Image (cartoon, rainbow, N blue to C red; front, side, top):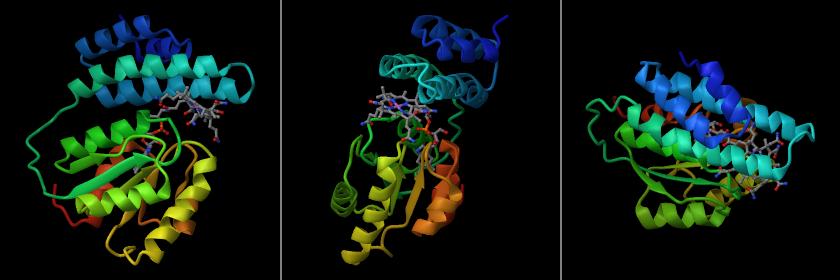
Length: 213
Ligand code: B12
């Protein structure tokens, strides 16, 4: 019988096809999709990241890790319970700040959509101005930012400053998350909310925008 630890191992070894097969098996065996995601796929990705930071992996391993995760995650997303959450007419503009890392951002988007929010996905490598512009163009209720590598941290500070300067800081609550961020850092920046996990994005958006689940 497949275990979540086996999946973590295959993701860590960056083996897309065996990892996808294991994901399928685990789902068929009735494991919780969020557990498969967090303890299998994300833990495996973290293992690759740890090796990369220790110079025991190269950029190609990051690429392969990304490919592996991107094959497994759609199966997991399909298995997430969708319930009957009605649309709530709240629009969230979501994107990554600067970086190409979009796996976390995509998960946040999926869970917000399942949670009834209207998500405007801005994609990757956005500059602070892009968030402002897309929020204005779409009549957004909230901005959600994914910050996955260190150079984007100071860009987030710039984003909040820009919203202030454009006198729309009160109009757009800003939530943030991503591997290099922490609650303390987000508080220091003056973000309206920070989440460690993609699912926290839904709780934050509901709380800040006064949406009852
Ligand atoms: C896969 C990967 C890549 C892939 C990404 C593929 C893709 N399409 O996303 C590729 C190959 C592109 C890549 C490139 C690089 N990478 Co890379 N990468 C990774 C790796 C292994 C996994 C990232 C990932 O997807 N994690 C899984 C997701 C789900 O996690 P997450 O994004 O943090 O999101 C979760 C939460 O944070 C949260 N969340 C995320 N966003 C938001 C937003 C809100 C509002 C909320 C509430 C929650 C939330 O929800 C998610 C799920 O619960 C990490 C290692 C690691 N430990 O994460 C390194 C890592 C992020 N990469 C790193 C680096 C250095 C790079 C490169 C600079 C390498 C290079 N020399 O070229 C480039 C940068 C490219 C660029 N310009 O962006 C470093 C960053 C270090 C740092 N402190 O800045 C890491 C940490 C590796 C390491 N340990 O050194 N990488």
